[in-house]
Image 1: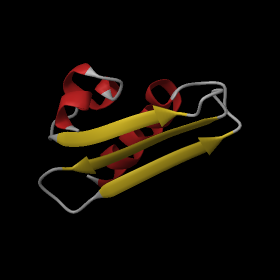
Image 2: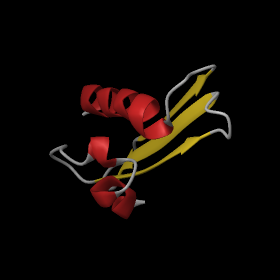
Image 3: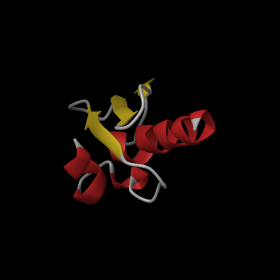
Length: 73
């Protein structure tokens, strides 16, 4: 999941000042997008699930997860 942040669909989270592991996903017909992200050094875990959306997990859910992680940190 760390690799997904570096080079995959979770790369929205790559420019944070701390290490994050994350994974994103999109339903078959782009109706549900999700992202799960966690700080590797602390016990924070963020899950974002968006129903009835037209975007992908990496484009819609991951930026929301990033905002939550930044707020928590």
